[in-house]
Amino acid sequence: MKKILLSVFLLFFLVLIQTSFLVHFDISGVNLNLVLIAVVLVNFFERPWRKRGLVVAAIGGFYLDLFSDFRIGVSVLTLFILALLIKRILRSLKEENILYFIPLFILIFILYGFLLILFGSIAGLTLPSALCFNKLKVLELAYNLAGGTFGFYLVKLCLKVLRR
Image (cartoon, rainbow, N blue to C red; front, side, top):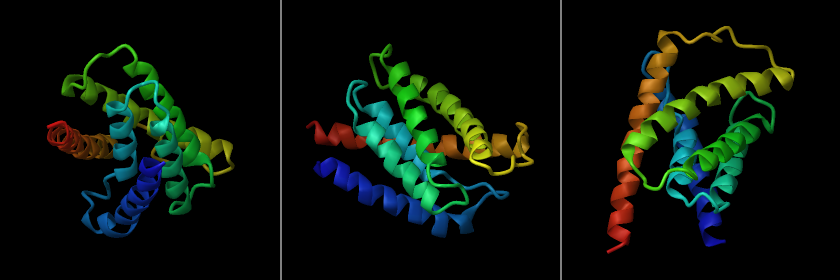
């Protein structure tokens, strides 16, 4: 219960940073998605049978919905489905390796964009014009992958220190 409560506050802090501070440090209009990175990291390092990562995905999605133009539930559903997919993929992997993390993060990032467009259109929002995979999407993927890789090594370092 304490970890869930800590996750609520941490995700709220990440959403505030993402929506109010990091918008001033964009690269060609591209920002880091700290909540997506956090959800991927939590679900990647958590054991596949645990459910805390699913709760973190739902909480992070709720906060994103509150601070975005989407209707309530679009980001919740998107992140929850992605967390389930991560857990399903990680059942076959035995170790927390960067060689597994990078392709998984790329897959999740692409599916995140696709599912947001899909669920946003189902919820009655118009489809964005940037539906194709262009240079801006590649830059967004690279920027978030760099943030996710940094987070991966930061989590590995923290786990190493905590296990001593």
